[in-house]
Structures are given as structure tokens and as C-alpha cells.
Amino acid sequence: MKRYFYAITLAGILLFSSLTALQADTNQDGAITPEMIQAFQQSFKMDTHTRAAVNAVTANDVKKLALNREMLAGYDSLFSHRIKTKGITNQQRSGRCWLFAGLNIMRPIVRKNLKLESFEFSEVYPFFWDKMEKANLFLESIIKTRKRKIDDREVEFLLKHPFPDGGQWNFVVALVNKYGVVPKGIMPETKQSSNTGLLNALISRKLRKDAALLRSMNQNGKSLSRLRTRKQEMLTEIYRILAINFGTPPDKFQWRYKDKNDSLSTLKTYTPLDFFHQAVNVNLDDYVCLYNCPTHPYNKLFKITLDRNMVNYSDMTFVNTVIDSLKASARRSILADEPVWFGCDVGKESDIGRGILAPAIYDYQAIYGTDFGLTKKERVLYHDSVPTHAMVLTGVDVADGKTVKWLVENSWGTKAGSKGFLIMFDKWFNDYVYEVVINKKYLASSTLALLKTKPIVLPPWDPMYSLVK
Image 1 (cartoon, rainbow, N blue to C red):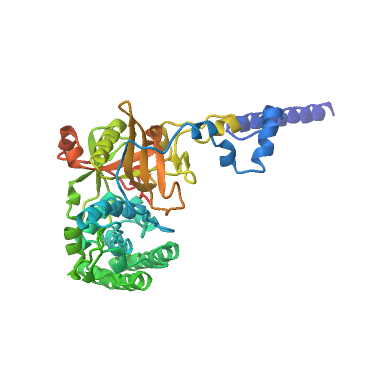
Image 2 (image 1 turned 90 degrees about the horizontal axis):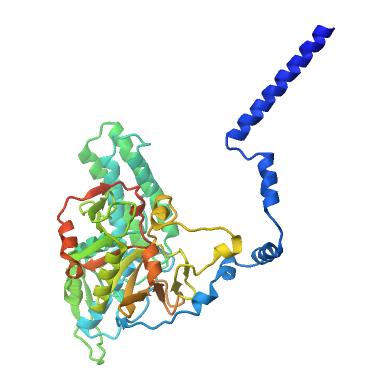
């Protein structure tokens, strides 16, 4: 009997030891334990400040509570130099910011050349061809990768992003150089060009279906020539869908205008390329893209794979440089009355309603008692920030030789910001502006020399691929 008792006791001790060891192991594997939960609960003290925060946050918009009133009182909307512009555009519910910004830097040129009071390009005309070119690029890329496995990283990237709205500066250059531009009245907006969600979803599904067919044809031994013939048939279907949604883009058009002196021009016939060369007449290839991406070495030339909208056009290429170089180049351009296309993370530390882009405009730390700060490099590396939106710099405020703030022309209509404009504090430029496009005549010789070097090629899943919208 004693032996039995001792055996049971020993088994109990061993079981208790096993459970204790298991609990110890559980505590060491990173799981939240009851002891941790108790510590969390004890750390949350419902003192006067915390109670006030709970009452306020649970019943209000946190952004309104965190708004830094002291900062709002410390700025004005005056600028030492402002480029004369006229009219605010509106991309509405579409991801065309890159295109609107690209056309917006050319609008003052048309107004000057034709002596117009105001002018706007048709944004839907180049957008139509952008969509056709992107569909072709996707299908051609599927053909190029037809022998790879379906879970290949590049194939997976293509299938996730078959038909995006977004783009970059080089997309603008490619479209204008190939297809030209037209006035807004020649090809006006439609319901679908201003709200592209459903169209993108439908054509993305169609393109994925086409991708499956092309890969199946390859597996069945069809030749490259046969695949390309089938691709053309697929693109014919895409063209039909786009034409139903946007209307058909013109090969030629007739146009006349009244200048600011109320003089009526003669009615002329143009092709879209004729109109670009006569009304704009600038070499877009003279513009250089400068980046400030602290995750890559500075003073180097980079190229991002698949960051383009055409098969036979170069990928996005940029010089990566320090932020002061970007700002100096942008300032020189603006002081010469040339607007600057730029890409930024517009959603960070911004009050679009008031039209202000400023660090610490929201004091979340005061509400939650914790630090949310990251360096620019950390924000990129840990996927907290990427360029998401393109706009145009049209003014700069310089005081005592130092840049204080920048004037930004947006493309969200007159109700966003201050009648369509935003005021960007210089510190915000440091933190959230990633790219600017500058005419090479405003760049240092050392920067121009980098354009002749062999670019470092980045994969399409690099954070800097991010298409601005």
C-alpha cells in the first residue's frame, strides 16, 4: 500500500514538474500570459488625465482632439514668390494625380503661349492611352514570364497589379511624347473616368483571365507569334471596354479659342501631337527625377523594374540625393516661374481641410502618452510611408535666406484645402517629400554627370515603386 502511495505521489510530482516546465516554456515562447495581462491592467491608471482622455476619445474624432492649435496660430498664407496659375483641377475618385500634376505644370505654358486667361487639358485623353498601354504591358509581361511558375515573385507581382490607375513622371513623358495632348473640351470627363473603381476591377479580372489563357497556350506548345496574335485580340476587347467608358480618343480635332484680349482665333485642325508642339513646345526629356530615399545610397542613379506604362519605354529612373539638394533644385525652378511636379506621402501629418502639411500638426503623444516618431529611413524600411500622391509646387516663401514653406497646387478640386491649394511647411518637405521633377538646366553639373552612369536596378517590390495616385 505504501509502495502504491509513493508511486502515486511520485507520479504527481513528475506531472506537476512537467506542467510547471510546460508553463515555463509557454512563458518563454512569447505568448501573452495571465501574469502579463494582470500587469497590463495594473499599468492603466484611471487618473484625472486618463479619465479625461477616455471620455474625449470615445466620443470624438481623435484628429480634432489632437489638432495642435498653437501651431495653427503661428503661420500665414503669404509667399515671397508665387507662380501665377489659374484654375484648380479635380481628379475626383480616380488615381490620376500623377497625370493631373504632369499636365498642370504645362498649363501655365499654354496660357502664356496662347495668351489665354485660363486653360485645362483633357485628362481623360492621355488616360485612355495609359490604360491601353498598361494592359499591353501586363499581357506582354505575362508572355515574357510564361515559362516561370505561377508563384514566381515577379509573376505574383504582375497578377496583383494588372491594371492600376497610378503612375509616375516617366508615365507622363511617355504618353505625351507618343500621343500628344488635347484641350479638355475635345475629350471631356465621363462618369467612369472620374470614378474608376468598377472599371479597374472589371478589366483587372479580364486581364487575369487573359493571363491564364496565354500561359495555357504556352503550356500547350503555342509559338510566341501565336501568343502575340492572341494578345492583340485581347487588346481589341480592352479598347472596346475603354471606349464605352471614356469615349474614343481623337486622331484629329478642330479647335479655336478666345485670348485674354477677347480676340477669337481662327479655327484650326490639329493632331494631338501637333497641338502639344504648337501650344506647349517643351522637351519633356529635359526633366530629371530626383529622389530622397534614405534606404538607398545617395549620389547614385537608380532604375525600378516594371515602373513604366509602356513596353518600349524606359523604367522609372532617378538620382537619389540628400533632401537639401531636392529643395534647392525646386526652389531654383520656382523662382524661375517653372512649377515643380513632386511626389509625397500626403496622408501623413496633414490637415487637408485647412490646407496645411506640417509635422506635429496632430499631437497624438499628448493624448496617448506614447512616442509615435520614426525617422524617414525607418518609415520607408518598415512600410510606414511611401510616395502616395503627386502634386505641383507653385510657390516658395523665403525669409532671411531660409525657406519657410511651399505653396502646393493639388488636384482635388477647390473644396479641398484653401481653394484647392495646400501650404507645406519646410520641415514637412524634409519628412514626407520623396521626389521632385526638375528641368536639367536647374541641376548641378555633378547631378547631371550621374545621369550618364549605369543605374542600380531595383525590383518592383522595392517601396519606391509605389505608384502615386
